[in-house]
Image 1 (cartoon, helix red, strand yellow):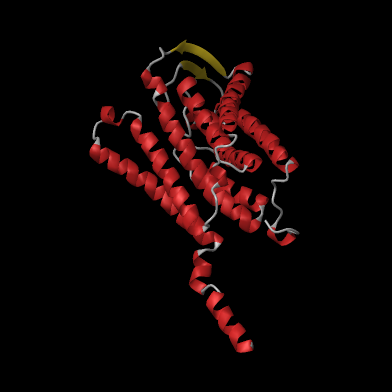
Image 2 (cartoon, one colour):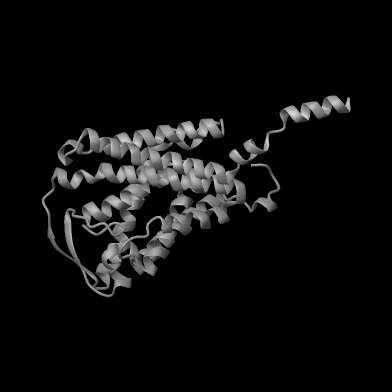
Length: 295
């Protein structure tokens, strides 16, 4: 009997290779590589097929969105073999609508605070055209790509392995480091990490991608294509032409509004609201060693 039991254990026990392959760090690395390479190769291929900007109007961003989603679905099916509840369509329209509203409102509130303190004023307006509407597709891709990468892969897997707060800190730091670029300040780094926390709280509040993707896309589009303010250091031209004045820690400098202390207040407040909702609905996972129930 003991020999038979030993043989069964030897057959069913996963090998060391499989334990390493399916561990949380390995799955995070594999997921990041799969999603990142998909996006990079898609845009590289599009440039070969359509070499001029006119030929690449809007459609490559939708193509990249679709391929990134398909690769993520395949990644989950292959490594976890479970239903993709994070892409459930039930309640999706409501969460997308709420996310678009929150993202646009957050930018508008930050701009309003700058205006109220004399650091921002409207100078003129650009005529509405496809040139202003076109970035919506790009911002949609950025929102989907970064939220799948940082929330659906990094945060989700780390949270299951470690608990919500270690995953919040890890994903926030990595999200901030991923936005390192010319002109970013210490305030900008902190704000970007706060944004990572806020997006993760949006994930926790719903356990789906729709809300955090919509907030992310609406934030970027409203900032760049409505208020003509640099998005993470990338210059933008939008509908409203404004003038910022004051020290960089107030206006954000060349990095844009995302490096302003007013933005820290807005993002921080949104994070607290979303996190409290997640906590009230039992969506905050304790540290792994303190769990009394199996998740």
